[in-house]
Length: 295
Image (cartoon, rainbow, N blue to C red; front, side, top):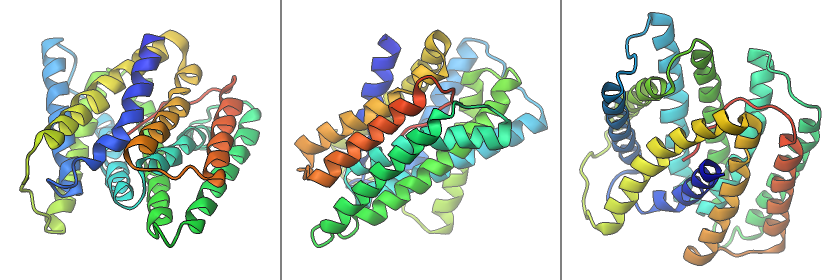
């Protein structure tokens, strides 16, 4: 229960923490700095624990794929989405991660799932439709919100692809800490290339307490600790029950967005939340799922 609460709280607050990065640094550069620091922390941890760090070419190929989809493209899209939409809507888009994982695992890794996931997926899609309708009704106030929601969905698909590549290395008994350390390092390398090609500024200005605290939170808690806690949770209760964190964290994000971003809790949005959560619950009891990723 402790690991479940840890993951849910940390991931529920990362969505709002991301927004405190934007006034001091380019969002894409912030992704690079975040995962560079996180990978260095993990490499230091693996060195202290004498965890294996040497792997063959096929395993590094999976590290590269995982790094690109999970720790580069996923977060570039998520940070862009956070520019355009409230943190609650970005978090709610990620409730669909469980379904992308399930169907992707079934199609590419032959991982079976309970038929109830189909009904859960339909409910979740209805929920996202209601959320989109809510944003269309508010288009005159926040015309970019629906676009941000779309970016978040694309980020979710990218995260799911990263999960599948990560699972293949886990099947080869690659230590999780080493797997994530290499994946994050390759991911920040791809982000660095993107920032250089698009001529982003690497300078960090207006380094105030909100930037420092949010950066430390995202790096240490939102990246290093949360993934470690989630893996421990999987060991204790299995991947299905562990995936309930993807249900609880968006609810926390909605509550936070209500207090800090003046989120307008209209009927369509509330119904969308209910449908998304109901869909997750129906799908997750007791259907199996392969892994998870968060902002």
